[in-house]
Image 1 (spheres, rainbow, N blue to C red):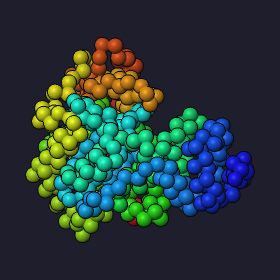
Image 2 (cartoon, protein in one colour):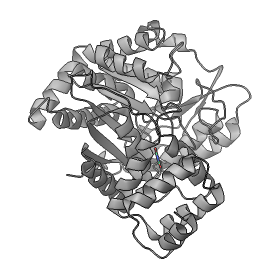
Image 3 (cartoon, protein in one colour):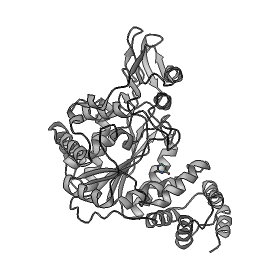
Image 4 (cartoon, rainbow, N blue to C red):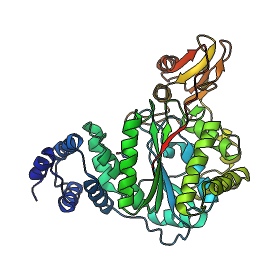
Amino acid sequence: MNFLDLIEQKKRGVELSEEPIGWLVDAFCEGDIPDYQMSAFLMAIVWRGLSDSETVALTHAMVRSGERFDLSNVTAPKVDKHSTGGVGDKISLVLAPLAAACGCAVPMVSGRGLGHTGGTLDKLESIPGFTTDLDATAFSRQVESIGIAMAAQSDDLVPADRHLYALRSATATVEDTGLITASILSKKIAEGTEALVLDVKVGSGAFMPTLEAARSLANRLSSVARLDGLKCRALLTDMEQPLGRSVGNTLEVEEALDTLRGEGPRDVVELTLRLTVEMLLLAGLASTTVEAERLAAARLADGSALQVFRHMVEAQGGDPAAVDNPGIMGRAAEQTSLTPPRAGWVLGIDARLVGEAAGDLGAGRQTKDQEIDLQAGVFLHAKSGDPVETDAPWVTLYHDPGANVERAIEKLTEALQIGDQPPSTRPLILEQTE
Ligand code: URA
């Protein structure tokens, strides 16, 4: 096959069949297609798009590029959740053990934070000793024995996605919904899940800033997942302001543990329960929403979700003492609190600016190999709809002496909007795809 012809066809908007798509993924992984040609092909996709059947073919070819986790030993229904990424999004840390406590098997392959959004793996690594590097055997044994494993994408799991994603990041070709769909679903199929709940974030802190763009991604993900035999449901959820009050790795683990103890912030609890309900329905562990809500709320309240989290920490080499005493994860050397410039009501707190400020303090990375400061971050004392006074802090920054505190303060100051009246409430869950 001639790759130049395929670039030419895609440039003209021709729909490619399964065979050439499979061939080009294999050839790229073998090093037979140079990056400059693949970059041209990716740019043609960004302009011309991928049809659903091209996206399915790309997804399959990417899955075939590496190993597939074998979870045939696991009898419980296998269901996972994927978020498109946000600021303060620690939902997986609560939802995965909660769904497992309700009877699901949760095989969760997660990512690291990049840019203004955080990643589940970095958060988990705040727990001393916790490893996210599990091989296929350890992963499937753990899912079987305790109902949950949270691990990094190994070198052998969808290597095509790793190579393509690196090239997409370097050539401004990340944004196409077909490429994003194939990238996300190939990893989910390879990890062995049978059902998937998608949390597609919308707003300033999200990958998709508008409802229309998020809806288009959610629809594409759901339709391609179903064509692939994966049961799938997507929620569109608000990411105009950060989720919860904490942004930063250790701080977010503490907030997740508070939530597992029944003391979490309202939005974190609401979204966790709602997504867990969708998982239970897809898994067939509840037949109505009311039944699923009761089951999830009961397992959160009776401490069984916290117990599953503890078992996971032990199984993955972490210090279980952190579960009862989060202080052992350490605290940033310095804390700086900001008061608002005037009294009033918080109209909004821009999630992207808060994420960037946390990054300036060391909590995030701009390139994938950058070191991060696990203890750095921000704690929001006030959120949208709360009253603020000039003598009380609205945010506390956690940082080391060498961090870029000035720049973080500038961004946080810009992020806060105050008005004279409380704002009308914006729902957290905006839409659901069927
Ligand atoms: N997350 C992924 O895993 N892949 C993408 O392409 C975008 C977000």
